[in-house]
Image (tube, rainbow, N blue to C red; front, side):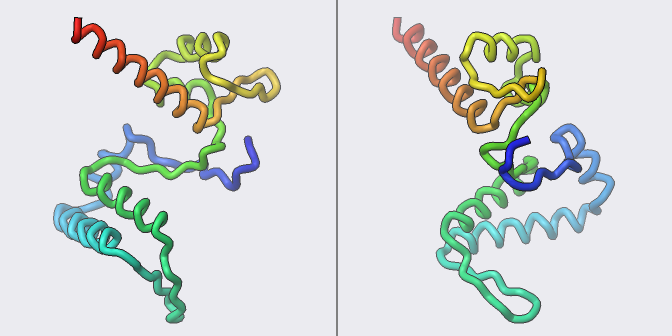
Length: 153
């Protein structure tokens, strides 16, 4: 793994989230949480905010953190799972393929064709999340441009 800080191993996958939510929250608890998320998003969008600790210590929350918090709240309100991962987080090829929505062998071909950069860790390929997302954006852009060209003909 890279030296980008600690990696949390225990994680809920998108597949697990609906079952986990259903088993851990009542309808009223979900409604209360939805209201809290709306309030959090609204407050995060209004400007400066402070975080207040139990001992009364407070700290101003930077604008970048406020906007991230608002985005997280918006996605959670919509029932989407949210993960925060460091850009230099290394992924195994199966996980990288899942993110792209392709098969693992197809991803391996992309790696071998130098379409996505990757380091080797022993005999295993790893993919940095930032490289994967950059390649995905380029691929999506090229696909979008091709559709536009075909639509104009």
